[in-house]
Length: 485
Image 1 (cartoon, rainbow, N blue to C red):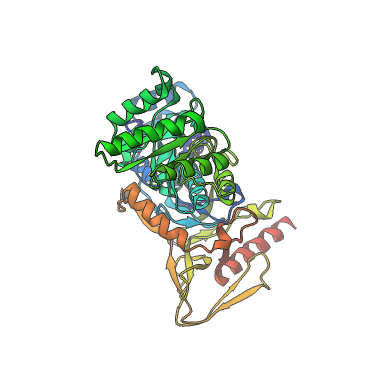
Image 2: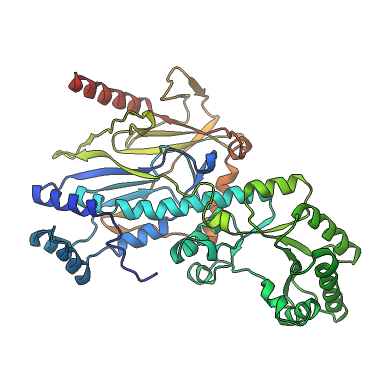
């Protein structure tokens, strides 16, 4: 996967449009915004992930001989255009929200400023990469929030929709908050912790459960987690695990981490009984971990019922984001540069209000409350607009502009969220390691209010428009309505 040429990872119409631009001599520089309209899982936020792979894709973008031969075989592309593709390289600029950042609907995750042919080509791959990883990172953040500080392990490789989804999904899950993954390839590629215990088949391959536990403990004394529900958790699994832990203690073996895992049954009831048995035997520090079709909702419920589980293995529902399997990011034209270098704003109309785009060459700022450090709002504006934090700032709801909020000078501060990652086709941004991005994400999640994180009817962070952008949008809408008349 790491060496695959992804240049043809695009929809056919991107290439047919490219040929159209080529034939008509359209070399205009355009601005495209990648954004999404609705938070996944009916939540209050999303987590940005996948930027490192976007940068890798852009840097390695080229049409090799096999690509050109295949396109020629379709009999829809002329030789002069194929010759252009054979020398193609991306020459534009890309701005993006750093990975691990929290983000909200309608604000640009990625902004592409490039000749329109080039910007058109990369649409599909950018959305494919960012949509998937942002979805899984967001799901992981929700699961980790439900776990309330307990460790969450990503265990979903065998249920993922293919090797790429399993590997890059695990990367995104760690960014979102998981402490590690069972996926060894993800561990190798991204230097993240790999974790795991053993399967029921290990137990069943021995004459009895005790022998299976004892042999496993001999092999892995420093990290001895025993799966106790192959036969009977309370009558067999836990007594045999306690027997092995006792023998280890008597032999002077002090594992760095030890405990049990359950993969079936009533996890709330069983965990409470298991905790009593382990404590009574003198093992109060033994970890109780659990798996079995977990998600944020079930973990939250188990926590509310007093489950004594402190380590969670989450697989299918995380790696597939089963209840919300797609992210919904889109990529829309926002402006075209004229001969003078000025960006002429473009807008897309729709019968659906939420599908009307925000025009122009834009950026956006995050506004924080100085006292709490929490996010007050995000403000989308045109590039070049300046804001003075020493003055009051008036915000208004762009859908209902009579709803206004005044932020007092000295009570807030602002941070521009889009950073340059590609300039002139060359990467100028070095991605942090995955574990560093995970730390960034932990801090980012701390800037959310508890009300933003709840699973039922979360309070949404307002994403507002600057007055200048709001007026520009209305002017364009009014112009289009006059044309219709």
